[in-house]
Length: 437
Image 1 (spheres, rainbow, N blue to C red):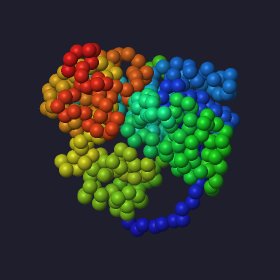
Image 2: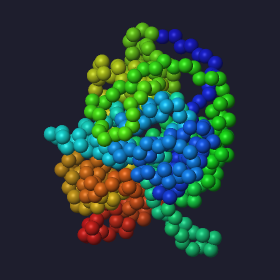
Image 3: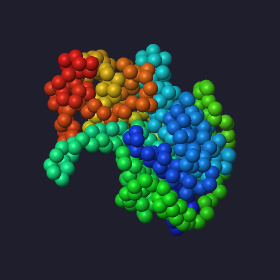
Image 4: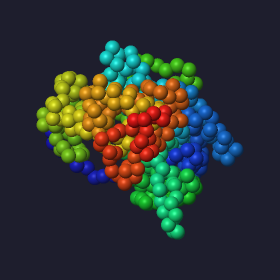
């Protein structure tokens, strides 16, 4: 297939922005304060028990309050906002779609309990496509979109100008699927003083920007960037696939769907689609599959080019090709990172799961003696299992999974002592509940 280049043209865009911060950092207020300068009509999907409406005296907006955080409810809300002609939609917060009632993690836990094997890893095969539909709905919506996400927390020790030790609360990764922040045009952290700190941006004017109490200044900069280009091309509309099981007890009205469409393959063979980005740029999907099938799996799951993503999904479905062991090692069986290991410890701490029980589960289920020996697939299973233990029946959306790092060595970026794992104790001396490790 011949490759043809065309002159790159900047088009007018709709904003995709994520605000990440701990409780009390002003995520909802900041989202509303920026939104009021982006457009006249603002809609809010509120998952925080009516917290957005507390600002109704300061900002004019319409709201729908969700009590079920099934991804399909978010999709319905996005479609309804677009159909109603709103200029800006705020999702406050997106974290509940991951870790909340009827969210992705709870759906996986339910599926695992229904499965004879009790394997939560297999359950992700049904939940991941549903979560991907939510991401596609957000990216394809024809309105400005601002989402808030809770951040996992950690406490760090600093020295002031007089050498005195101060304890400071800092936000870590957002409570959502790893890597989700890459889907947004602008990602900014909010600290406990409501300071807007840009961490990632496609808007050059916001690179490295730090703004206290963000509002009109940020919105004006964004609008100048978003409108500096040619009018966007009209895209044909296509229906959004619906999941087999629909959630209940939902107040969001049904509306037309607006996913980003995928261009048809000229030859009719999905394998002939040419990838125009990444390490295999210029190759067809079939050629990539022959030498690097794991990359095709990645394209099917995460490619932002809708045509390439569809081609990869179709090719994998048609061939039903299994990844060779060496490729699986690169994509699913690789050792987990320190950040992921931190998260596992923090979840165990929040749910008060005794260290002995965690070790027993790892030995019986995955035949490993230490969490550091877990591969990526085993790690995801252990995290899901931990969330089904202890305090799992409590309000998962309120759990701050960044607290409880097990050893002070983490502050220096070091691993915990290899001879002992306490899963969350601050000093490495006790397991949960005060029992000796």
